[in-house]
Length: 402
Image 1: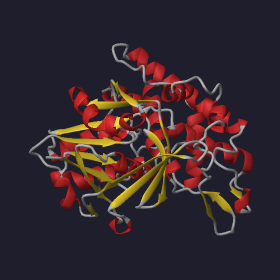
Image 2: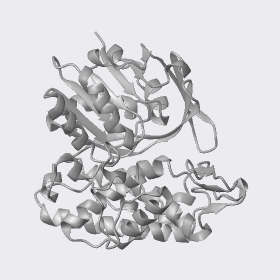
Image 3: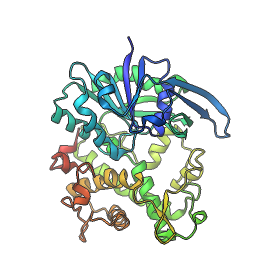
């Protein structure tokens, strides 16, 4: 009898994961707020850098629903494919329906933001002693929804992947049943290495430093807005030295945080807690890019990504303050790193500058004049708004160590 897997959310990753799970041990269902836009059959094309189709995949969903009671009680696996800042909301929505009578595996396509803290939160609140969690260090593929709810396009598999699993002894089972199925089976690449801890993923130097440093770099060069939409630079295709330096400065502060944690806990395995270029080389298994700027300008998959902008009341175009680059990467990224830095007594002028910029753009109160997080501000402390460790009851850095 097949196991039941429920994908939660309809993001780009869902459009890749569903077709790649064909011929697996799973019946796949979808929990989404918009079931009416989804086809029963989801298609995926794998495109090479020249636009040639290297593979076609499809899979039929067993069920599609916006009612967790219809899908979650029978789930053996639950896989979240949504922005990071939606994880906790989703977990608390589905938690009352998760079975207590069997082991249930819950995972995410991208492990930023303290996913293990989130799962432990519902484990305690709902008595879910039977759940196992996992998180990928990076999303296994670069993909886009070509036709939302119907078809996705994938631009390639990463050469190497890592994932944290708790309890750790479930890694071999999840690797065989799930990890190999969504990458290695199809490409011969993307074997998943077991990451010893979730903190290495929480301090990931991917999206949370790429997106925020680029947006801040654009602000430094162009100011708050552009008069015409065609004046807005491409997010990666027009990547410049200013943004590259912003990312390097931000990465350096994360490196200081990471190295301090490594020194405090030499007994822990933090070899997958890497700086930006090391992670880039790890994921693609080659020292292709010598600089931060090269890593974006040489990318065959990122060139079509536009800068997320909206038109303001003056008719000009400005960075979308409600986009996931803020909601994920400030509140569940830079702010978490800042909180950890405060506990370690580390000064972070670049993180402070970016949070202060986000505070201005969002018209919120996030950081004080003396560069301390305003942890009691409603703009940070509202339920599920931010992932600061103190909101889970943690008081010291040691509380964050898994």
